[in-house]
Each structure stands twice: as structure tokens, then as C-alpha cells.
Length: 125
Image 1 (cartoon, rainbow, N blue to C red):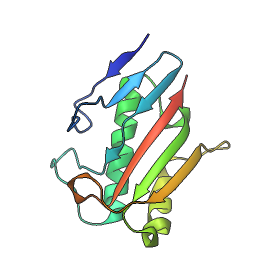
Image 2: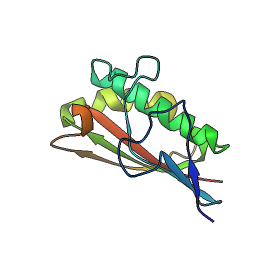
Image 3: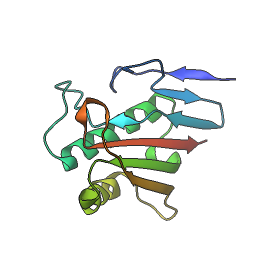
């Protein structure tokens, strides 16, 4: 069974997709831009955007009854690979533990809203 995940604590979808999809044993989040939910805008700088992106993922997972510890795979899209270390530092604040998720990180030419980072996650129960 497939269930839509929707929370007011993360940005609403800006296209024909869901914030997340719950398959029962697995949860998939859509890519989350670093939109600050208190202001509704992208903050300045890749570190602030990475923090907001991960906070948004955390909110979507919480809506599904999961935590960041349930994540098994992430994909990080960054506008500039020179920001890799900065994003890693923020990522490490949210994703930690004995068994870290698998991850891909790619530099992209452009992200929606001209964001500097977008992160998506797959979690399991």
C-alpha cells in the first residue's frame, strides 16, 4: 500500500509530487530544498540551506513516525562541489551513528529556486 506523506512542517510540493511516500516498510522523501519554514525563503549560504533541507527531511520522516536514524540512503545535489566540506559538516550534525546511510553526492548546474543544495532520503522501518 502506498500512502502520501504531507506535513506543514516542510515546504509544500511545488509540482506534481508528494513530500514523501510511505510504502509501509520504506519511506521515500522528495528532494528537499533548504527552505526555512519560519520565513518560507531560502536562507543565504549553503550551510544554512543544508541545515534547512535536513530539517525538512526530519519533519517528513517524523510525520511517518520515523527519525533520521531510519535513513538508509541519501542523495545530495549541490550547485558547487567546492561546498562539499561545508555540506558534509552540516550533514554530520543530522546523520550520525554507528551505521551511516549510503550516499551519493553530485554537482548540478541548477536547482529549483536557484537553491545551493537539495537532499532526498530513503528510510526503512
